[in-house]
Image (cartoon, rainbow, N blue to C red; front, side, top):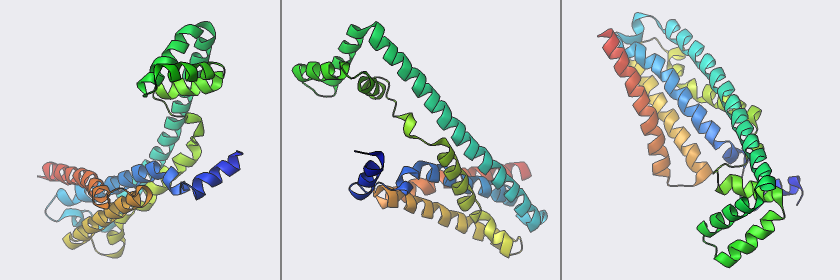
Length: 244
């Protein structure tokens, strides 16, 4: 099946969308963006009785935006480098496996038989399948990468796209805690609105996760809110301790 037909099949028959393919980057970048920006707001709010009002709303916005863009860039580039490194490790390991098939074919054959039996095949079927794989070295290498090393096909990843998705998700979700400070004076009520906006952003992120996976919606939302909320409470607590 040609590559474009395969992608169409995955989209039409299995419902695999670009959103689902990038879900990890969206959740990862979005959660970090929300928490990182709210940490600025919560840290200032926790640092004194008047909270962010002591330094002014402009300062909160400037600190928040500087942190938002700097961390978004770092996260996006970090995702890019991570994917590149993962691909390099995958390629090196796969080359080694192909070399072992040439220099130690019997040992690799028996490893394949063992792995196939661990997956539930009968000894006879495992021997037959290993024999087929041995005659197709590239396929056998892919099999060994997956079942011996537990490594997925890193060649299918796109570091540039995934880095950009992380960057954009970080920005889109990360700006939410700052929105009240763009609109209102930096009072305690504004901080409460920022906290509510942060909670709403975490709920929205959890809902996106549910929309992509169709797992239990309460679990998807609760896990996202719990993780993000814990980080936010830590940031507020640090502000209280330092300002106390």
